Structures are given as C-alpha cells and as structure tokens.
Amino acid sequence: MQRRTMVALLTGGVLGAARLAADAPAEIRISAKKFEFHPDKVTARVGRPVTLVLTSEDRIHGFKMPDFGLRADIVPGQETRLTLVPDKPGRFAFLCDVFCGDGHEDMEGVLVVDT
Amino acid sequence: MLQSDRREFLKLAGMAGVAFTAGLLPGERASAQAADFHFVQFSDTHWGYSGAANPDAENTLAKAVATVNGLSRQPDFIVFTGDLTHTTDDPKLRRERMKRFREIVSALAVKDVRFMPGEHDASLDKGEAYREFFGAPYYTFDHKGTHFIALDNVSDPAAKLGDEQLAWLAADLKQRKPDDRIIVLTHRPLFDLQPQWDWTTADGAKAIELLMPHKNVAVFYGHIHQEHHHMTGHIAHHAANSLIFALPAPGSQPKRAPLAYDAATPGKGLGTRDVSVADKVTLVELPVTRG
Image (tube, rainbow over all chains, first blue to last red; front, side):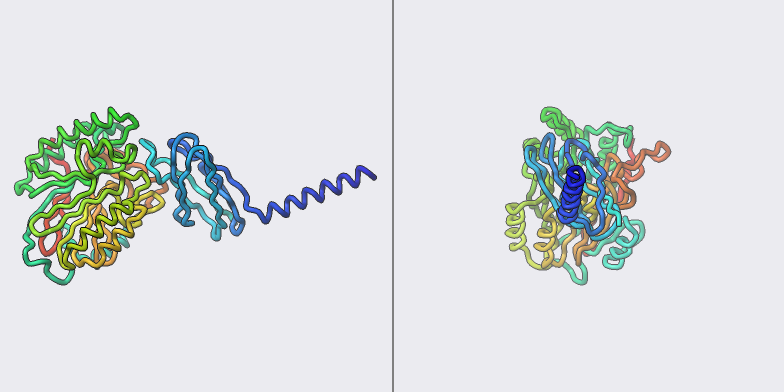
C-alpha cells in the first residue's frame, strides 16, 4: 500500500512537471566559438515557445535569425536568452553577424521547425 | 542577380547594349555645372588570400592593375570599395598585407585613387591598421560637379555605420541641393540584400532614409563578389565583381561559399568596372585580361 501511494505521488509529480514544462519555453543551449555554433542544427515545434540560451567560449559573437527578427550579441561569461514561438514550419538560418575572423562567413546554423 | 531584381531594375533604370545604363538622373538634368567623366571601381581584392577558389590569387590584382592601365581612355580616378586585404588575426601580418597591397596598386597609371575599408581590413581592430595606411574610413570629395560620399560600414564589427557617422552624413547632405549628383561608395549593401547571409548593413536603412530626398543618387559597393543591381525607390545600388573569387547569387544555394574555380575559364566572374557619369550612369564590366 505504501509503495502504491509512493508510485502515485511520483507519477503525479512527473505529470505536474510535464504540465509545467508544456507551459514554460523549452530551453536550447547553443555555444559559440570561432567559427561555429554548437549545435549548429536545433529543432522546435510550431506554436511551442522555445528559449535559446546562447554562450560564447572565446570572444564576442553575434546571433542573428532574420526570419524571426532576432539578433543579439553573445558575450563571453554571460548567458544571452532569446525566446521565440515558431509560427511556421521550415528551416530557418541563423548566423554570426559580428565579424570574428577568417571563417566568420562559415559560422552559421539552422533552426528546423516541425509541425 | 536574381531575375526578378534584374527585371525590376531594368524597368526602373533602363539598359543599353552590353554596358549597363542606370538612371542616376531620373527625369531631369542634374545641376548645370556637372560635367561628364568616368572612374574605375575595384573591389574585394583580398590581398593575402590563398585557397582553392583562386589558385592565381598572388597575381590577379597585378593583372587587374595592368588591365586598367591598358584602357585606351584612362579614368579620371579609381576607387577601391573595401576588402583590400584578406583578414588575419595577426596585426603584424595585417599591416604587411596592407603594405604589399599598396605597393601593387601604386603601379596604377592614374594616381588619384580613393580607398574604403571592408570588414576583412577593419573589423578585427576597429579600423586601426586601415587608418594607418589609408587614412579616414569615411569622407567626401567632389569631382566635376558630382559629390562623392564614402561610407564606412565595417569598422564596427557589427556592420553599423553608427550614430556619429549618420549625423555626419546628415550634416553633409544638408549642404547639397535636391538635384545635385551624389554618388555613395561603400563596402556592404546599405539595403537588406540577403540578411540570411549577412549581406546587409545593420543601420543602412537610416542612411537610405537620409539620401531619399535627393533626386540623383547612386550607390556603388562590393562585399558580395558579383555584379548586382537593385533599386530602393529612385536610388540605384550597384555591386561590383571581386578580384579574388566569385560568390553565388543571393539565396541561390544554402551556403554563401565561393564558387569553384574553373581552370577552363580562369578569371570568370572577376574584374573591375568602368563607370561613366553623364545624364546617365553607364557601367562597363572589365574582365582581367592582362597577364
């Protein structure tokens, strides 16, 4: 009996956490360094809010996602958080827009939004 | 050039023969004192680059200098719209590249030469080395009744002109009459050509807004390593070929990687351009022909 109660409580706890998670934006961590984002491919769902948590391992980089009108500096030692709610499926490019050296033009990635 | 862009541009500006004739003066003559002349635009020479996209990188600039020196009608002056050198993290090497670049272009027969920085020259040190070798990154000059404005959208690594330069531009334009001929020279496109490839200037729209009341304006720029023509209202924007490698048409492929070198057609997509300024601006692309 005690064990059954414990399982029910745990289950309730998990369901509650899941409900909270559905309301709160999912977090995707992206790290930047010359001349790449890691990961350089991230996924999201239409209508589900997502927060991009951006950090830099070396110097100031930029993060720009023109299709969603997003941009921010990524400063070493800080977390830069950008929240968006994708309203359409597709592949959306992001790139570094603060020139960082020979290879800057290759510093890009893609957000894949599924239905 | 995207076909739709080209159609729109031709509709607005007109085209004649092989040369590209653009409407600098839509509908009326410019100031009576303006005289006809021509200049040559070099862009994106990237001195110091080495890579598969141009196995002849050490010679292309010198060949282009020889080609322009061979023109039967020498230009009044020559402009370089940025990325004179290829970027390096090493400040000493950056200066060596600028020194060697300057030596090579000193062979130009025309000695009136105007430089502008590109992000490869100026973005890693906020233009410090560039200013040592080439002076102010933004400035004006006048030639035969045409007012030239060189803008710097690269010394800020975030590709901004910045409030100070925009205020300087506004003050300069206040001194111009509405129908004065104005030619803007810069490195990056002032408009949002392809933001997904960073082919834009973060605050370029503010510069265009300042230019918009002026009737006779054209912009010449580089950065995108290809001929391209676009109109923002009545203002024509002309991108130039590079002298190091060609880049794909905006948005034509997933990545903005250099086009592959073709040994069968070396120099394809590279070159300089002659710009004749009269009632119309006429552009003639000049392939690199001198060995």
